[in-house]
Amino acid sequence: MQLKIKESLIYLIFGASGDLTKRKLVPALYSLFVQDLLPDKFALLAVSRSEYSDEEFRISMKAAIREFKEIADVSGIDEFVAKIYYEPIQVSEAEAYSTLKKRLELIRKSDDISGNTIFYLSTPPSLYGVIPQHLASVGLNKRKDGWKRLIIEKPFGYDLDSALKLKDQLLKHWKEEQLYRIDHYLGKETVQNLLVTRFSNGIFEPLWNRNFIDHVEVTSAERIGVEGRGGYYESSGALRDMVQNHLLQVVALTAMESPSSLEPDAIRNEILKVFQSLRPINKEDVSKIAIRGQYLSSSIKGQNTVGYREEEGVNNESSTETFVALKFYIDNWRWGGVPFYIRTGKRLPTRVTEVVIHFKSTPHILFAQDNVAHSDNQLVIRIQPDEGILLKFGMKTPGTGFEVQTVNMNFHYSDLTTKRIPSAYERLIYDSIKGDATLFARTEEVLLAWKFLSPVLEAWKENNDIPLYGYPAGTWGPESSDSLIEGKGMTWRYPCKNLTDDGIYCEL
Ligand code: BG6
Image 1 (cartoon, helix red, strand yellow):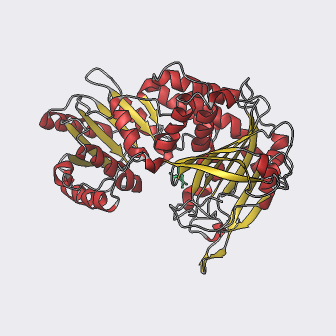
Image 2 (image 1 turned 120 degrees about the vertical axis):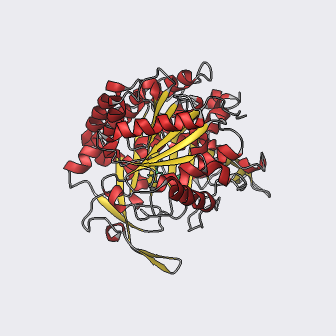
Image 3 (image 1 turned 90 degrees about the vertical axis):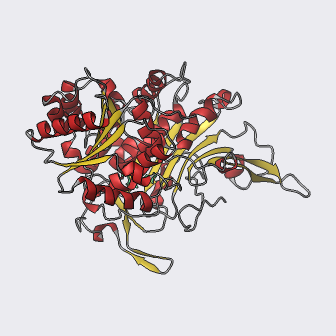
């Protein structure tokens, strides 16, 4: 259960006129406020280049809270926005930080708040090194009058070299324990439920290893395209945007050993060990273990959708991938020889994120099976939508003979509660204020993730012979991605072959 936080603080958001602030951060902070979880002495200082007065900014945040509603109760909006202040500064200029420091001091005095401060970097990544350095130059990294924490959005670097450089810039003035790297997948309720499913049940653990598991599949599919973020996405692509962070974190929680306690470092140490055990990829093997694709124009439910290259901000000869499928191994005792498959893409038929544990088939095939899927028991952990767990196993088809058919045991997380489930941002913002770093990625993890994916990024960049497959929007990506999956007749799991609306989960 979440408890009210007592220690006073100022929450400072850099890049406050951007989309994230109005869509996620302010609605999440308001939700915490209206549930009486924030300290009584709390202020939000919004900072960005645009010229707003406090009052103008408050009015726009009022509208944002109503529009991007995190919680139904709107009774506290006026009281909440009265705690918001705005300071227009040029964040890249060192001189601006003495102004900022003075403003913080004024708010502290007027609202009787301690020196505890969270600095949230919701800015373009090019400022992730600059802002912390400027904050330090005026002593705003010092913990003498209260703690100081830095929250950094992804992407943490563009590749291994830039991530290493950023790490050096940050750690020059800040301590690792002051850094909170947001990976919003870790804030998702059902991602955390992976830990509970695995470590609170005696039935799964004995089976959770190479002896019983054939392979593990993680899929994160999106129906949407790049949605006006073409400029950002062009320099990112699916591997950097989704795999380097979200999907590898999900893999780590699926594959990690049980922590000795729920202490943040106990959990994060186990996560780190998974990253350390990822088998390095050889650049020469990239064409065999990775498939990339890019969505093409198509007609979805009678509506024409543009291809990736026609999106705003995208080069019309772009080679950026909007789909990636990857096969890899985790070299440790638990997972030796078990293939892991990751797949993610935009403009696929549905929005779904799931982990599928495929168990080994029986050692002897007793019953006639015309379909290998009959012998493939699957545990499907659905992260979104319709969060839940599905077990697929064989049953006798009623009637004469011994025909086997696959049946589903399906648990829906929504059956547990009618209460609203806090969003990932709400959970992570609360944890950051409480000082609980469990669900934030550590520097070492991030660097190891970049190191692991570097050969893929390099091979794709250097070798034009590696195909970039086009796939029509609304399909499951390049057909050749099935060829990655080992085993006769094995394919990815296709939870729905057809298009569905977002939020609707269909199960075959
Ligand atoms: C973000 C990516 O980190 O995650 C987006 O930048 C992607 O491209 C999004 O759409 C997916 O998040 P979710 O929570 O909708 O699965």
